[in-house]
Each structure stands twice: as C-alpha cells, then as structure tokens.
Length: 340
Ligand code: CP
Ligand code: NVA
Image 1 (cartoon, protein in one colour):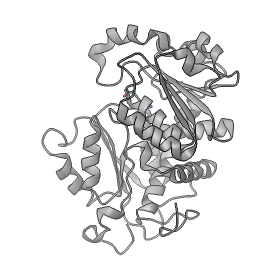
Image 2 (cartoon, protein in one colour):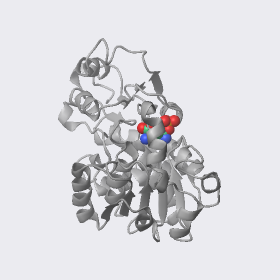
Image 3 (cartoon, rainbow, N blue to C red):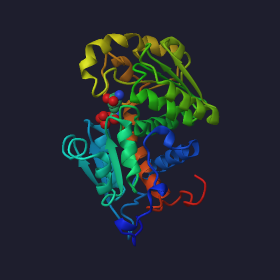
Image 4 (tube, rainbow, N blue to C red):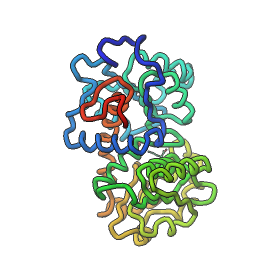
C-alpha cells in the first residue's frame, strides 16, 4: 500500500497478484522471483518493502489450518527480515472455517494486513480468499499444491546445477499429493523434464497433467507420468520424494506404507539416476520409508539447503507480489507497466 492510501482506497482486486499454485507465475515471472531470491539470499536485508520510509502496512497474516515447522518459521523470520510483522494464527485459533466463512474472513483481513499467507485443505478456499482480497494471498500448502516449497526447491537446484532448463527431475512416491502436483507444474514452468512415478490410482489427475503439458509446450520442458520407478529414475539429474502419509491421511497410514514400497528413494534407486544427481525432500522425512537414511543423510542430499531456501524464496515472493500488485516498489524489478 502506498503511503497516502487508506484501506478503503487501495487498488481493486484485478490489480492484485496472488500465488495459489505454481502456474500462477509465468515462466518469466518464476525466473524473476528466483533471481530476486538469489539476490536477497546474498544480501538478506537489502530489500525491505515493509520498512521503507512512509511504507504502509507492516503486518502479514500467516494462518495455519494444519501444523508446520518450516513454513511457520520461514514466513515469520522472512517477514521480519522484510521490515514487517508476522501475525501467526495457529490451527483452531481463528473463526475461519467453523464460525465464519472464508469470504467474510478475507474481507476483514484485507482491510488490515499487507499479505495473507494460508495453509489449508481445499484449494477452493484459497481461491475464495483471493477473490475477496485486495492484498496478495499466498498458498502455504493445501491438499493439491505446495508452490512455496517448489520455489525453494528450484532455487536449491539452480544453486547446485547452475540452471534449470533441460534438467530431468524425477519424483517418486505418492504422486497424487500436493508435492507431486507442484513438482510437475513448477518444474515444467522452469523448462525441466519432469517425471512422476507412483502406483495406479496415486498419480496426478488428468487436469494437472494437461496443465503441465500445456506449460511444457511453452518452455521446452516435458512430462512423463509412469508406474515404473526405474523408468522415472534413469539418468535423472534431480530425485525427489515426499512422505507417503500427508497431513489428514493418518488413518490410511498402514495401507499407504505398503502401497508405495516400490517407490522408495534408497541406494538402489539412486544407482539408476545420474552419478551427480541431487536429492530433495521437502521434510518432514520418514527414514526407512520414502527415503533411506543413507540417501537423505548422504553426499547427494540437499535437504538442509532446500529447507533454508524456504526463507529466501518466500521473502522474494512476498516482495515480488507487493511490487507486481502496485503496493510497494522493489528496486531492480521492472516497473509495474513493464514486462515481467
Ligand atoms: N516442508 C514443509 O512445508 O514443512 P512444514 O510442514 O514443517 O512447514
Ligand atoms: N505432502 C505433505 C507435505 C508436507 C510439507 C503433506 O501435505 O503433509
């Protein structure tokens, strides 16, 4: 928000940019956010949209309907680094979802805060929040996508491999979950060849595959969805996995632990990937299930850099969304009227 604006006069929702899923950023915009993240990682306090003299709102609402370690800490510290104040609302602490609709909650929050960050279940809730908010809304994980995690993952891969375009990234395991969808959509947006392997019935939906293929046609990336873990792994530059039991699926735990056994990222799986392949896991990890201890704690694993990069990627995302929404000016980014 610019210094002279009041909550009643801020821009209409049409000018506001949100980040609800990976493809909400065009390929050029994703590259711009990752470039800003690298710049801000090198100089962590160089971009402070919330602290600039005369800047408007300082508070970012960070709402959790599900538990979190990395997302909570990276948003809280990231907002502070940007010169702002994070208002963290833990599961069950607000009226949203049980006493008050998403729409009414959005209409209240958008009059007070500069950005709304929300971890929830249904993606449709995030869409409803954004439709009623004149400030950016960020998806901090939902049942279908985890796009902030993928910004961190891509930043990590870029740091270690130099570039993203043309790399092969393979994800194994529960391929119907939020991480599989986000690997697919964010990976092809970066021009990567994304391979997804999981059992029948636990693969990405036809709609997500179609969206990924459309994006891949634009960037030179490609999509392979298979039930054959070896086919996905062969020569891969990046190997990724995630828990087999996502939040909310705890009652299915016993069945899931046997369902995905053939998709474990263990030492045998890593022998099929490129010799210099790197390993990612969004964490929390379950050693001996989706990933072997020897792999996650071994020399090819980048998981701690990946976790740290949540902070840098999300700081860049928040600054970029404020800039592109006309609510702040970030030096070094193209002016609002210019191309992304
Ligand atoms: N990777 C991730 O989102 O971790 P948390 O659930 O701890 O936030
Ligand atoms: N798929 C996992 C990701 C956790 C960060 C879940 O939704 O629980």
